[in-house]
Image (cartoon, rainbow, N blue to C red; front, side, top):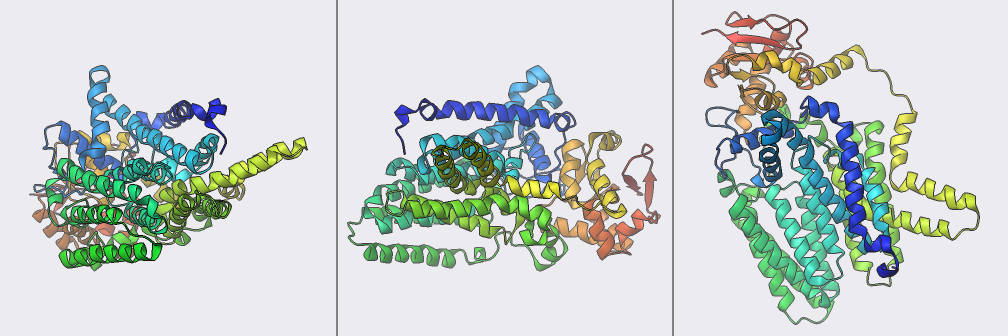
Length: 590
């Protein structure tokens, strides 16, 4: 690395990150202007997040995260925390006096994800500075913005929690690369605790980071200070996070959130790490034996105390997995999605992995070897996770940035040393194309896709039209009701209208989801019993939406298929909607 003092660009890196973020934020808002205007929260979690924030601002208790507009009257058990609600709620309260209620919500939803984007950019720029070179942060930022799946988590209106989890994951990577042990260990511990407060989606990466931190101590006993700071901050951060943010429902022995289950693991693990760091152990074999023993103690105690958490944390029943969870597209492996999805998603993670291996080889006789081994292990794990679920793409692209930046920075250095102008210009252009993974997107765009058939066009049209405000407006003007509708449409319905729904796609509410599945798949009489049990007064469908195609194909003679074919039972009274409405609505006769 060159001297930072000799390079004003590298010295003032945070200012450049701020400028880069401001330009990106303005561009993203401009690109989403129409969506912001029409409040197009298309993801189910974004709609539910808005409903949760509204309920809190309307007086719902801080520790009560149940969504009472789903599965009334008891409400749906939501496993989230208030941490992600804070910036959204703060923006709404700050903007409301100037813009009014609905406009304040629109702009809060547009701006809040950009805070997570800024935090992610700053953390990843810091990681690249430490791992590659002080001035390489700009290349890292350029690579990051070409990570399509990662950037999608920070776009305006994407108020779900994944953007913040990515930000804290980037912060943990920056902590791993920190040459100051105490600061680096504390950074990793705090980032881990904050991520766990939000949810467990990044848990595999956080466990790997813990293992890497322990491995560095095993290899070099001088890393004890990093291990100790990590253990203290992890335990303290999780304890404070649990006390401040754990909802009433998360204070039981649940496995899918920061609960007493994972708090005990964090406290016990943190204490053991501190204990290991204080032992005057010489020689890596002895340290390895102690680390393995500590891991065995934590694992054994966890298995004895919480055996029900050793399987899938969602605890989904086989029936619900068969009828619902297995149908979730993003939960399928990347190779099941076709090359048009797989290539642009995997291009950057593969380049990042190659770059990490290159950086490890170059750092083999330097103090940077262990930091690069850690970054390489994370990149490899994230790339491998794509073979399990497509939704791992965002984290895989984020964690690929250091390796891709190392590869690109080395290539740019080589190009600068060449005498031929064509080489000095052409090689950097080619490098940008490669290390950003842009070639994957270009390959897809250059090869024309097959035109969608009539069936696919109908699905796309329904998915696009049904969640819109104009389509929902006539329904929103009707008296408040509890409505039987699709599981995936429930959050949009409750966020954009005053109506209630039976279920949304949230695994803790298995019976409510199964009731919707059974209602639309079963007979009219079975549906009537479910409707009566939930106090439903209206039935709403949007023929052609993705979820409806599952009912139509797997239950061609079921309740949904009869409604779609205008064969509703006589205990349902059709409700007139404006001409051209994509919906069909019925009122349940008394």
